[in-house]
Image (cartoon, rainbow, N blue to C red):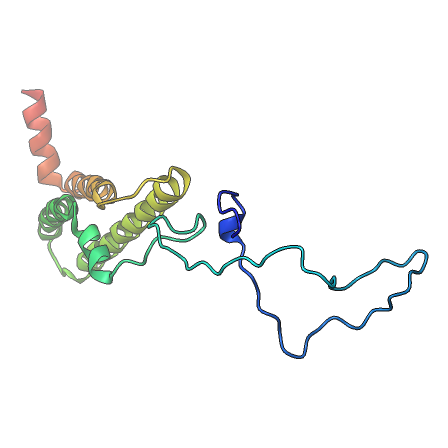
Length: 181
């Protein structure tokens, strides 16, 4: 029996001979400068026994993590969504005040608000990508939620709402009256 305490012993597996593939016949005569190649007539080693693979749970070092279902990813994106929802609600209310105060047709202001929401969605995607590159790839951490990206989006939407209010004349005059008294 082979000594299995050697580190290489558990990774070595005997390969059975291939049919039709053999060593060409060798001449028994010694020739100067020519190496003798081929199987020896007597086997000096005993073959290794075939060992079955026993899973240890660690896997190979280069193996990737198991793929997670789509529901897990959706649940991860939902965590922290209250921040984005609050920012979007604030931006919508401020947009409504600005749009109604301007009078006239609401088509143009509505298009502006939709484009602002698209920019916010792009900012959310950029924050998620940045988090993936920095946290997961560089630092090796696992993200369990999207709270950071939702918080960045909420800050943007809150600033957007304040910008809408700054363009509304009666809100600016009311703010100036409160801060001066």
